[in-house]
Length: 345
Image 1 (tube, rainbow, N blue to C red):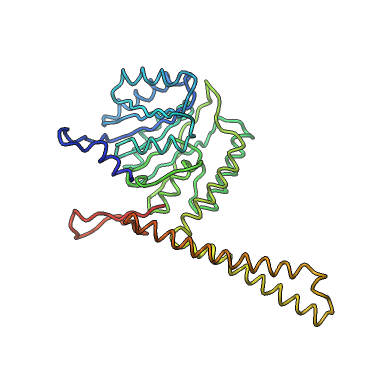
Image 2: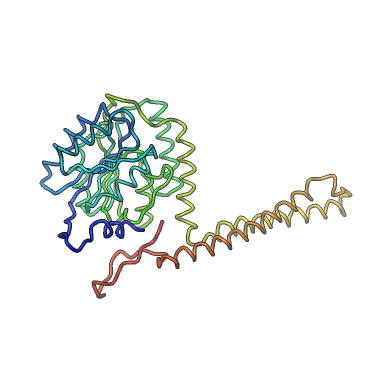
């Protein structure tokens, strides 16, 4: 079920007035941040109340066990614009971000960390940048207040790697403080550690992307949930994201290309094996070439067959859900009821 279908199922009733969407939805993933929540509430709502626009705050608790849930529940009773999504257990920040997008309803979405290292006073600047015509505004922690080696240096190299592979150049993918127009994230599904790649998804789908410096403050309470073990996860997720962008619609190009390369290696190995036998008097059993030729031949055939299976699955996916392999930005001189086709990541 898509996001828009989910909204219809939640809000469409015969005896209720239509629900007006707020202008802004602020999504806050939370995991064991009880020491920061009171000050976060104070700073965040102070900024939002000065905007002069309708808003909602969607706080997603990712299975906290430090008293955060009790505090959030009490805060929601005081503030009707504070909405809570409480997970049964810890699923990770990507799942929390996905739930925040699914359960929010604003036409503009801003995500922000709960640890107070992001400054809520940067939100008006993000919104102003969006109004210049951009679809995504990504925060850049240029003066980052984290450990120089364990966090800053590793993050800097990771950002360069992600930019090089994705061909979407940002200085800081890991900054949670970002602003999106809803249409660029609707339909996006996130898994693993892929929340940091939302700007990549949006850019690949034609969104206009810009990066702007934002404030970054030292953590005053609690401890960071990020460690060096996430580097491997990010790299693997980046491989998945790159595959989805370049080969999702035509997987045979990847599997078939690898299969053809394997068959070429197999043929060259066989040719060299025969050449050595008849012209150099080297017996086949004296070289690993027979084994190499046989293995690469089998790998090549299996890769091509796997590509064909993937092609069948892709066609089944699109046709069973009535989806198309493209996304339309707008229609001109068409009936207004004509739906815009969506492209899946």
